[in-house]
Picture (cartoon, rainbow, N blue to C red):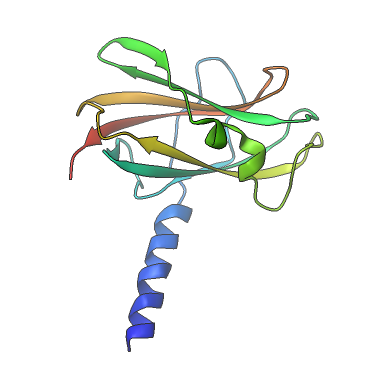
Length: 153
């Protein structure tokens, strides 16, 4: 009985990550991912729990060949736009690829996961988050924007 309950909870948790979220394209004209899933979010604004990690899964097709990929995150809150510096181990998108690895071939189908920390010191505000994937030449591979709000437990 307990095994069934644990399996059911695991399936629900996986389902919440794999459900696609309708996101907006970025203003910079970068290619929009074919699919974006964000843990615990099925519609915007996404609630980001302070002190937790938010898992984002992106699926996109590589418009160029590349040696490496990295995530870029820009947040706009209270009228201020600023880059969000990811920890180095999370910014390297090559470390988070599923079913492929760097270097990347042009036209390759890519699935990548970003684990973005929501620090306990963040204020409880609404914001727009733009997440991008760029290569070593800063060419855009994929980009999307979401409405979100930081919430407390």
